[in-house]
Image 1 (cartoon, rainbow, N blue to C red):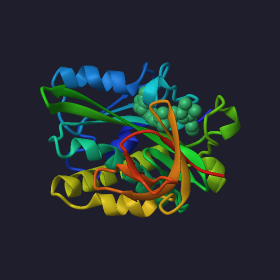
Image 2: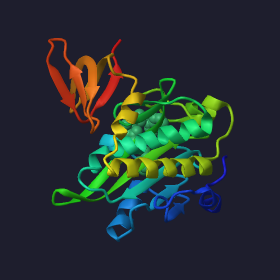
Image 3: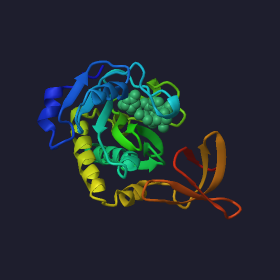
Amino acid sequence: MPAPLSLPSLEALLRTKVFGRPLSHRPEVDSTQEWGRAEARSGAPEGAVFLTDFQTSGRGRLGRAWTALACSSVLASVLVRPGSGLYPRLFMIAGLAAVMAIEANCGVPCSIKWPNDVLIKGKKVAGVLTEGEFLGDAPDFALAGIGINVNLDPATLASTRYPATSLSHEVGTAISRERLIADLLLWFERLYGEAAGNGTIANLWRARLGILGMPVTIVSNDETIEGTAASVDATGALTLTLPNGDCRTFVAGDVSLSR
Ligand code: BT5
């Protein structure tokens, strides 16, 4: 079995000013999102990061499960206290940070499957889940949950909706989770700062999407719609051109390439 995460090694590698300060690690939790939410409600600062080696109730969007064998994955929740303008772009920041960290550590190109999956050669290697709590209309805090399959045999994962892979499977060697997390947080900090300063991270994100101009099927709110992926706007909303020429824009859903 791979070794538990070493917090001292990770702390020695960390090059951020805000993110990962503080870093917290527990061998096992229900979900880092739940843990982070409780800490945020008790006043934990922006930049606090919650890490574990195993989740008993790891989750994806819409109540789906996120599964990972013990000590095999990055399982992280990053606490932010964003303004209203930044909150809708958090999933782009988290997804891009995962892409950049994976590419830096493994040298394999990644793409993003709209809106929140990171793929290598068309297989899902990472997923992002952003959740917020609001005071009136403004976000009080948000948690960017990031799961990356690092050192695991994809065949050991419970059956997934989409083909899955891991970094060790793609590169043929074990990958340091500590290095990967240090880079993930460095990229998260850079992109978050860029987005907060109204930088156009959407362009970087858009460049990683494999679907623009392609025929796709989107499932959103139990509706299945086919069309051509025409564009994504600065908040990541996806516009499809429908077969009758009309356009329709989606902020959430599951997209796949049409056959
Ligand atoms: C996601 O949701 O992809 C978001 C996953 C976020 C997980 C992190 S881990 C740290 C933090 N704490 C949490 O509790 N969650 C976050 P979604 O797009 O809904 O994809 C979920 C689907 O991916 C599931 O229904 C499975 O089919 C599939 N899946 C589950 N585990 C997987 C894995 N390890 N690798 C690839 N696919 C997986």
